[in-house]
Image (cartoon, rainbow over the protein chains, first blue to last red):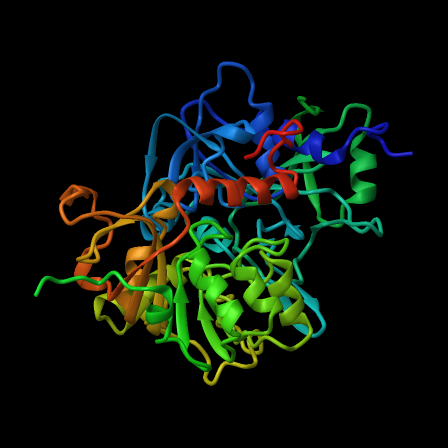
Length: 225
Length: 256
């Protein structure tokens, strides 16, 4: 029986990630769990969502008859444009990502390690690196605050929070916060610091499922969700 | 004689033959030149090198179908699995991919190709994408250069024999207006092709597009072809979004 008692781990991660977003900042959400984060923004927190296909200020999914074939997000899901939205071309959008105009990005991960390295673009399939990079490396290069959002363990129960990543990297030392279905870590110059554990879990429970070394924050407490 | 670049899709696409190096505007299926893609499928033009941002949208949709039909020999872009069709072709060894580029560098390489530059100096992926053995099919390892103490990858410009872009409106001079997130880097792709085809929702008289709304100036375009109307294009995408579960189904009798 999972510690989540039947809750979807992806929803737990997305809900917790949403609480990391700061009012007024420009945010880019990666595909998968990160995209779900937008559904759980705390009331009163306004952020500007950036989409790498060329938009600041997109909003929720439209109704079927309102969906516009030229208005979609980076996964080509239909979206709407909020009042004050701004369109830009692709090179401008990727330039904004590299040059610090996006404050925070939430990205999924295959592996993350205690030095803040993130691997999320490639694993070996049929002897080839697959599936591809997309915009993730530009985000890891230029966004000051990368939040890695991933399940704590893989389907075999192995920790995805590693001492050292083994897969090709998406970014080096770019991750500042790690949010999983078990815990929240800050990545500091001295390594990982455990800030929160899912309610009911102890530090020892977290150590048992985590390959990476970590210290425990003096403010350690239950996950704020 | 007045300039008139409007022509049939047959006449424009006659510039694409087996083995042609083609650039195509798109972003995971959005902004794709649907009618020109359908023409390629119908005529079975194969051995193409396709330069496109991603490998399309999954689920038997527009550009992704080119991979399923085996028309693409080599893909040059950022992602090999946004469409399951490209992913299958790549993993089964039918599609050549020498390397994946991050999206910013890829867009900068197309921009360089369009703007007459030799390439782009790219800080993204330094120490990662230049690691030996990562992309064994590359003819030579990635070069690096130091500028003011910082290391950059030297990435060559990308150009094509034929560029196919998709806009909203165009006039006979070839001026193209774009809509929303279909703007993408369509203009850069147009500039990087020796022969450029603009497929648009609507062909309008010269002067109908306000000069400040021209997203791709006419001199970068050789052919203007009529694509789906905007209304039909909305239907095409809404139908596919419903199929993928990204939009709710409509009640019986209503059409998207």
